[in-house]
Length: 344
Image (cartoon, rainbow, N blue to C red; front, side, top):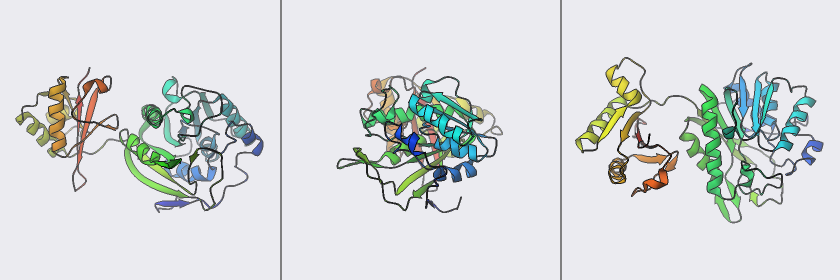
């Protein structure tokens, strides 16, 4: 893959294009099918022959086909049974069905998803008004944008669990227009992925052809989209600044118990450096609010599972989420990260 921040896709090969007869059998006529050429450079750069490439939104098997063409194993999940059948037939026509694992359902609701080395996917778009068989996990059929983002978050949490340490998670996504409103799906997804992985780079994929006309309410400009490249790896934090933060919190009278990897590292500085500092705080809303407010006043961004935390704190809104995250990045790029546990 070239080292540019963009990737020009000049044509779609008829050899690997979704066949017209398969496209005609799909409820959406295959209009959301990506290109094999779109996926091949990422398969080559971010995986090795024999490794497993996973697509949590398998769709028509485009990612899986690209993986098999490059000598990788392929696995994917798809919630629509009809598309599962199309994937199997498409791969069989290329004599590449062997080495592929397909699961029917959303990966966050399935057991037995095998581990994988690379996650590579095109995400489903909000507002498409899915005309096929209804399913609770069909994100094309999300009733609200917030629900759609929640569904994406659930899927990528499961992706993180299955992805090997050091593996890449790459999502292709566009911002979308609904009526006169633009929804920043690409940027909202980047925020979700950033709560789970470390961002490595972005690529802009450029298609020189005009967008296809559709009757869908959701309109995108398929002449470009983002490839968001993240990595499952430990963050590097500023250890000295983190220790100073903990001392400052104690000096301000905030009660907490230090636990986890940072506590172990303080006992043995020759050990593995921690990626954050974990503290357990009293689940008293007033005390928690005071702690979070102090952190915000000192330049920290506060999130809960990737969502911004509003102050004053309404703790009932965060029951079952277990912790808040406080991040501060200074002008040198140095990170201080604090995870504040408030539930067992």
